[in-house]
Length: 399
Image (cartoon, rainbow, N blue to C red; front, side, top):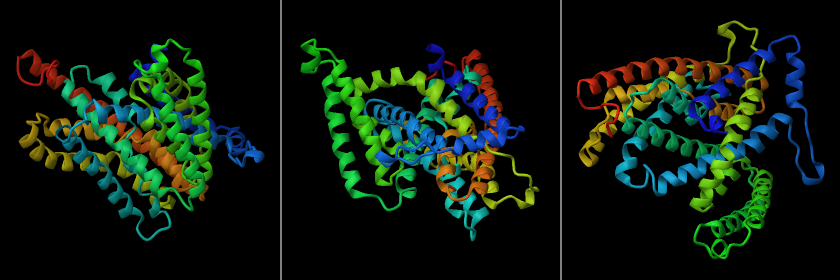
């Protein structure tokens, strides 16, 4: 299980799964696999009408978003985002890393039917980014790692809000109300598992509470799905209301499943698209908006906004990051992958051809960012190693 909690190995699994999905879809039996992915596994008596691919992206991926929400809550409560001074620089950089890719995408697609796909290049895959940093950044100091984590967490928060507000239509208030009830009950029952709760102190069995939490989680997912809001938001809501200590234990137990099964399965499914047999000039503008927006937009956005943030943050907190650090983090931010693939599915749900092109653009754009970030992190790590050997600031144990 330890290997499935490793940042580097989870990133490797994601990459292998995505490449495998793309290769399989373009072999002779590829159309059969694509058709299998779109085959529906319906539960009409529950009002559920989902394809196999959507059971993965709408159902299983909610577990990933639950983990993200628990970790985000932790950072906001006791971590690197628990005060304005700590959150200021990564927040400014994260906003720049969202706005610039979106503007680049709109620049390519303005006046077309695919302009609504602007959220696709705004996401950062936190698992992939941290994985690349773990592989190539042995001598990157703690303060830079913390900044990347804070920026990626805030980026995830923005992505969650985008999914909730821009990919929701005709929400059912009745079902949202029912979801609110189950979410509230979930939060209340989770507090019974806190170390000093009366239930735990009386040495009662914890499995009945855990069973209730699982039932409430499934009901929440069902009500959110029926409401018209994307079902993964259920995982986000549950992660935010769960008590911190039980939430940490839940993440510890679910992380190997998410890293080893759910995310690779989603990457395999999402990347299973045929390569368009068209010339580059015939590709939809959305393809180019995503392809350029991810690697270029993130670097430019994070560097520009982060540079402004450095001027502000240094006065308030003595922030010691440099433009070189921002450039390196910007390359890592261009790895959109998981969340970008999900947004691509949501944005182009009614146009399979454009959705396929968007998937390829996400994979290519993220691939370019992976190469650039690998080089940038390697160079930056060597610079810090040299500074550390010379006894200068920014050594490997610098905080």
